[in-house]
Image (cartoon, rainbow, N blue to C red; front, side):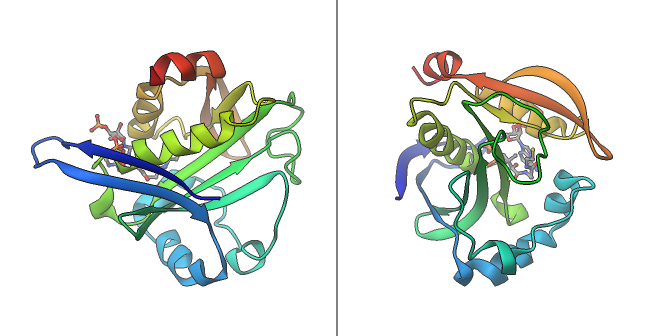
Length: 187
Ligand SMILES: CC(C)(COP(=O)(O)OP(=O)(O)OC[C@H]1O[C@@H](n2cnc3c(N)ncnc32)[C@H](O)[C@@H]1OP(=O)(O)O)[C@@H](O)C(=O)NCCC(=O)NCCS
């Protein structure tokens, strides 16, 4: 399934640009690109102590509790989104957690693509995808406490900080967006 978002944005201090964002499933054909993005300093910094994905093993795996998605803007692959059901995720990264949630990871690959509004459109599509399932009552994200810009990004989308938590060695702030808050934020 692909989803599309067509928006005209005007990033700070620049001319307006038509964003035509789609999410598609990641496949083995994305292996080299995902490895290349993994080596980018801004991606490494946002990941903390978490290792990168073993893409070669993970890309072919089809799991009903996870989606690995590539965001394409005007047909160009620009970023990655993972959506999981944290209660069913196999490593139990989130520990004991209620059902009816989704957790999202997001990054943009090229430094030059940061701060153009692409991430906002990617998250709108990801949230639409999560809340399209009636059972989903809220979506979680867990930026590093030190990732101030990502925290501001989530807050602007309507996420509320709910918990300061260590995930392994990573000092994180958990944010939650309820279905109700999502409805209000997008209206
Ligand atoms: C977080 C991210 C997906 C946001 O996407 P984006 O396209 O840059 O964001 P938008 O242009 O839609 O919105 C701009 C806001 O994004 C946030 N942002 C986060 N990291 C940023 C970065 N490295 N450069 C620019 N903006 C960033 C800021 O809040 C920014 O607003 P500001 O100018 O007021 O600081 C993207 O910046 C990114 O991939 N960052 C690196 C990886 C990361 O931090 N992922 C999240 C891990 S929890």
